[in-house]
Image (tube, rainbow, N blue to C red; front, side, top):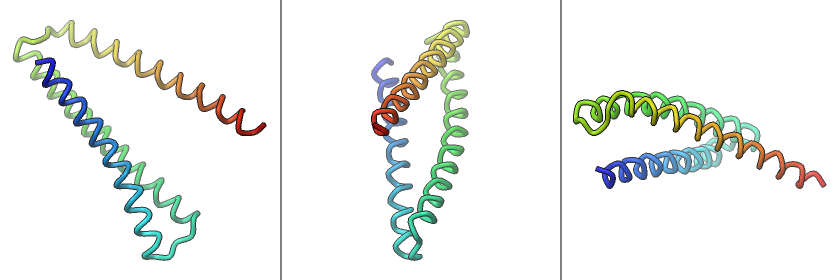
Length: 113
């Protein structure tokens, strides 16, 4: 079961990277075909990423719901265990976000000097 879970996580991560690469490729191709300037191209890329982000959040929410349901029905985890893991992951994700923001602040400060 652990091996299957790792495969699922890796697949999701790979799809996320694929969509980012795909968005960059599409924006680049459209820029050359429509002869957009850098500002217009950047705006297009941002819109693509916003749409992609929204869609991926919806998909991840649905997948998460069904995955939790499968865990409960198969007896792999109890409702309490799923709830505990969900809250633990949210806390860790928040810590990673905070650390990334802090690192970006330091990089920006170093770049200004």
